[in-house]
Length: 500
Ligand SMILES: O=CCCC(=O)O
Image (cartoon, helix red, strand yellow):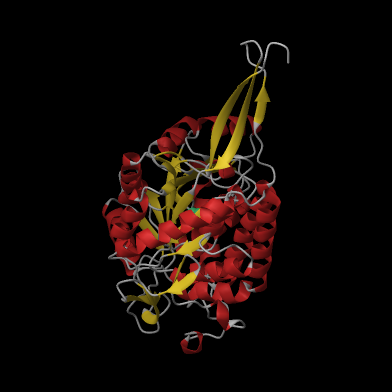
């Protein structure tokens, strides 16, 4: 209940503690609940219904029934509901941000920033709803006309991560609802409540019962529940954001039913700084990109390559800026770096630091977990800068998902492009240079779905988001491409009479 929370909400009604199935707030059929932890102090602060595969059929059936009506709702009405949703989320922005902070650990200003970013999606997709268009064509065969029409694909399932629980939902749901699909969300076990606030506000915005449903579940039940959703014959589309390992499993399961998938997977993104870069600009952008949510964004810079001539200078600028960070609970006034969201991330971070030092890396800042030390009950890790990073270290191959920055030195453009591309992943790449020819070459030669050119912040509702290689397929956000992920194209061929 909202009155038991460790924080106050202006609108306590948004805090929902049940699943939303077919427009009804219900417990899971198992009647079990699971604990949700505050990463800032490691304590349980609420519980959520632990849904299992037994909850799936009723939820999908209700979403399917709702789809029969929702698919025929005209696009302007769908756009108006999206805009109303957008307005209600805006009105409750600060309350939702508090919930995000207690679930994820990120500083409150970052949670508010996530809300502002995420609201770009509801706004954008309200516009997209009315711009879906088919085609008319005169083919070679005589007296014929060919049409294409676009229609919503059906019930869509969203399997979402904990790192951006509002932005990831609104990016997916905005596109699905604009297209005329109904959607079932399985939030991450760390972040059920922020997603449930959106479900509550979707109802208030006028989306009919069953159009938007949420099935929270524990870590233990996540694989079985997700598989049951992906296998249900009435589910026609699955969108997943998370690790490449799990993405491959989902793609395999969905291939059995030939379900359409959008997969936004791992990053291991390179960040290149050339001798001619504006170092102050590159460092400022890297600070925002790398320390955002304590290094836990899929598009974060995982491998920072700095050209020989500016390596020491750039390290010094970064270290000075990083020393200014204020580590603390996300809800504490002035905190600029929160904990990581799960204790699992601490173990991985420690292993990467140990491996880097064993292979000759030098820690110039941080390097240790704070969790367990006095005053740090939460899952805190020092912001860490490692110089002398080399190919072959764990940190060059694995996504870190913790506040660790590894600096690699390079000499030539050819060398760094080969290093940057030497990964199975291809989500985002970033580079900083003032050379316009090099800018064009890098845009063409870096293997990633998104390229930041003198910027570390390229995500926006208006631009397509998505990776290549083992970072997945399909695009979210941007014009046409994202809404098309939730539509089918039907071709109609009409033969006219000879005398038409
Ligand atoms: O973590 C992945 C999403 C980050 C973003 O949308 O910018």
